[in-house]
Length: 522
Ligand SMILES: Nc1ncnc2c1ncn2[C@@H]1O[C@H](COP(=O)(O)OP(=O)(O)OP(=O)(O)O)[C@@H](O)[C@H]1O
Image (cartoon, rainbow, N blue to C red; front, side, top):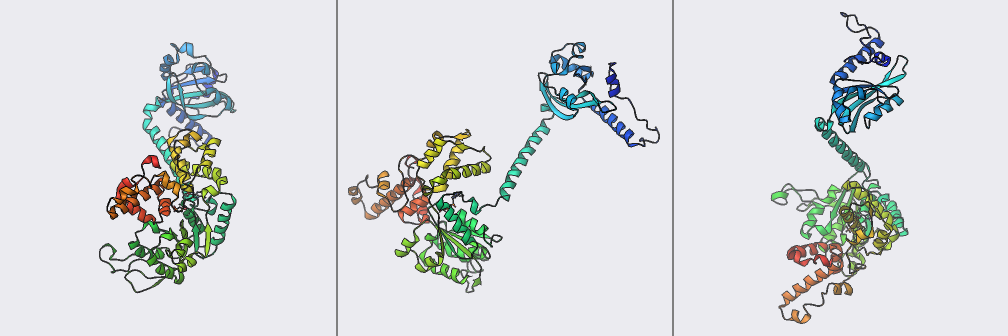
């Protein structure tokens, strides 16, 4: 490094010349202290040569020396000569410098970013000590000027790695968390606690469980949780949504297809859900939509723990625990002959009723908090809180879609707004106004009036058209009315209409969007 051009004893002692004395032909000195001193000297020389500029500051923070390279920063710092700069306290002439901190603490700052009116600099600051280790001052090195351009690729890479690290941490935390636990069913109201108590009790048994409750009350969540808390937790949890599978495909879905039973894609045969759930749990969602014709075969599978794939005359033993769920009134369906009584009794061994949200509004705040936390975790958005007036508005709202609807509303509001505190005004913009749908049930007369289904066109007009056309028109209006009354919730609408969800989906697909209520009806 260039020799300091200052006669201050500090400089001379602190920036030693070739102190260690290696024998020229034998290489490194023999003692460790001399090797270290040599290493320090060499390192310093490398730094000094690579640096864009250097300065030395004494114990009282006064600049005692600057390198040739440093001089080019002087104009930007407001100095036109070295004489005017040297001798000044460093913090007075180099804004944002931390040289004083290094002198006071004696701790080096190996790499730091310094930004002031002269630009941005990658700097290094090292304390200078005497033989007794007393700090005499500090040396500052400007390693790079304008690192934002010269180091841009490195900085971009660093930012990307940082982002990836955060994503990985988030994913890992999500994976480690058991997906569904009974404690994850949020609520401390008496009805919620009772549902959890029953879930814990049945988890230990192998008996069939029947989960009853309106749409979106957490039946599937609790089914997962019961499985996770059961001795079968290590085996598969297989779910079938009966309403979503066309009737004609259900048998193969449940019991599988024997090889050679069909040509084409099914030629090799395939396992049914019972087989896939062997050793674990089979979740039969929307069991009320099970076609009557298939119910005896399901009953046999439940009782005998045996399945017979389609096109086969062999039975296979399975060991499956069944959890069924429905939002329909199975007792009424049995009375009306729509559901077999023997299957109902077989399923109804351990029924657990999940309360609707309106029955446990005391849990609303805890649910909102837990759902917002989950939304933030999954989306990477900031965690939001809700104001008192927002909670009051939510409590006054009717929740036909229960917790699923609550979750959707929270998600929408969180996505649409940047504020960390969500207020009633934010929710008012999203919550459907108008008809209070009330407890879903048989087609309610106010719901019908809400959608004016019994008015235009009048009965007289319908009489003037051929019967199939009139029937089709009535059917459309009934579906529109049910969708309007349930704010587009198709499960609740199908229940109100007394038809399977799959049937409603089929009708909507057939009619196209014209059958759905206009957005302002929802
Ligand atoms: N008690 C609860 N605590 C936390 N989240 C809940 C709770 N109940 C329901 N949820 C959430 O609400 C949503 C709907 O729940 P889930 O699918 O379990 O309802 P469901 O009763 O099975 O509905 P459907 O009858 O329409 O199938 C999910 O996102 C679930 O995580």
